[in-house]
Amino acid sequence: MPDPKSNKLTRRHFVGAAGAGLGLAALYYNWPRNEKETKNPALQTAPEAGPSLGIALAGLGMYAIGELAPALQQTKRSHLAGLISGTSSKRKKYGKEYQIDDQHIYTYETFDQIADDDAIDAVYVVLPNAMHAEYSIRAAEAGKHVICEKPMAVSVAECEKMIDACKANGVTLNVGYRLHHDPHHDALREAAKTLPLGPVTSIQSEFGFRMKDLSHWRLHKELSGGGPLMDVGIYCIQAARYCTDEEPIAVTAREYKTDPETYYSVEETILWEMEFPSGVVAACHSSYNYRCERLYVAYSNYHTAELSPAYYYRGIEGNLGKEVFDFGDHSQQAAHMDAISRSIYDGIPTTTGGEEGLQDMRIIEAIYKSAQNGGIRVSLA
Image 1 (cartoon, helix red, strand yellow):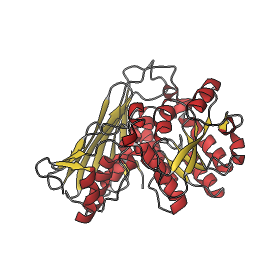
Image 2 (cartoon, helix red, strand yellow):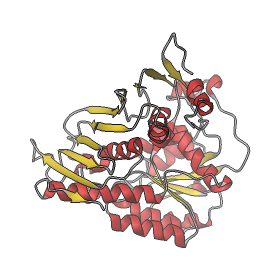
Image 3 (cartoon, helix red, strand yellow):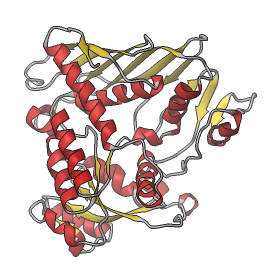
């Protein structure tokens, strides 16, 4: 149990809680979080016995290069095996930096040739949202496992096509839900199943940041599929689902704009409520016009859990009841990609499959429907 002198829930306590009835699986949370730490021998991790999943990154933008590529230098059961980009300077620069031979580097025009590349086992699609379905399906048709950044696609119909394509080609499909491999969120997920603080009574969740650059694809619906709801509001949806261990039965939503010139094609700020079968209501909001990042859960015995910041790559802080989290450094992305490798090679199920992404898109479509119709209640039954 946590040290009564410190009231901090550490990695050791978190993993050890399995024997105390919380059923928390052993996790892998010793990952560096920047270039300096990556080169620190004390933080290197030894490869784990078993096959290593060779992953090609499709799209070499900020997230792929700033987070995924460095994480793949720290994984135990996966590694960076290929690069796909439409920009020659990126292909050259990152091919050299990560020592990827030219034969494993592709353009979007040569993308389908990965079918003949035995070094690549999976493609991680890190492209604008509207391109997720096309390149996930093409990767599946090339016989490669698919990891698709969230949101999985821009419509329920696209999600279903992706699932069908992966099944037809005998490959797996996972969505980039990195927080399924974060110890803070794992603790809240497990609390919903084991009820150490009693059943959940209410949830508040928010995630937003300032996005005003009209040259960015996120502000153009034809590429993004939507605004902050699709981009970061999806984390609030995810949290409400796993903090209750239930699926919503209805939603209501409202959209607000103070700057219609900037947010001409996507929502600026959106507020929504999700109703669950137990009677719990999750009150959520997301915005591209201000910074917010918090998850608050109230339980029936008057205890609460709070994460603030709640959803970022690192630096999450918070508590579960009276216990303050203290998990140290870890890489959500490295743990996630290794989990996908274990699911493929060892048969260990993941919680980030295509059906998970499809369910979020069903909820997102219902939220948009409500907001576009004056906040009407939209049933998900």
